[in-house]
Amino acid sequence: MSLELGHATPRKPPFKYAAYTRVGFSDTDAQGIVYYGRYLPYFDLARVEYHRHLQLFRVDSEHELVMRASTVEYFAPARFDDLLEVFVRLERIGRTSITYEFAAYRVEGDLLMVTARQTLVLLDVGERRARPIPEAFKERMRAFEGDDLELAVAAA
Image (cartoon, rainbow, N blue to C red; front, top):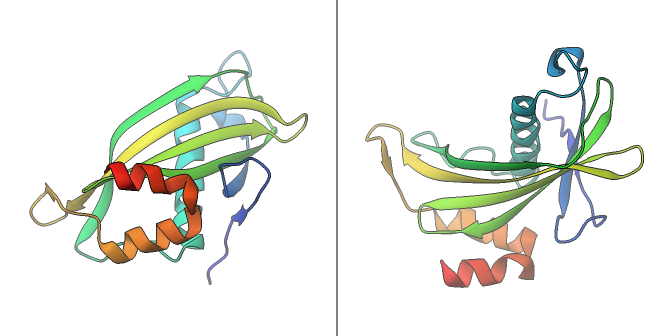
């Protein structure tokens, strides 16, 4: 069964995809707000659903995308039971890496909570070395992202 938890959306250009998540009690700290590190699983959910939507769940069985860098900026606190819509887009495709951009909004009030940028590297699992992103993978991403990706791809 392939249940997609995200959705294509034109609501927040240049983002074209988002996934919903709800803040759980275990996501909050003693002050009752989302602990800063709990946003990373929200971004993972959005990125995985983005890949599922594009039918790019895995590159292949011998290669994995692994985290190289993650930068997060916090603008407003989320609290227990808030419904968040986490927007994701592929910002840049390099030779061996891809960079995603995220923006998490509280659905009530459409308030920007957090933004992030994450770079993942395609790794050969057996050799533990970076490998070039396959052209078929790049093409599917380009087809979905359109002109919002072209400048980054041209510069890569």
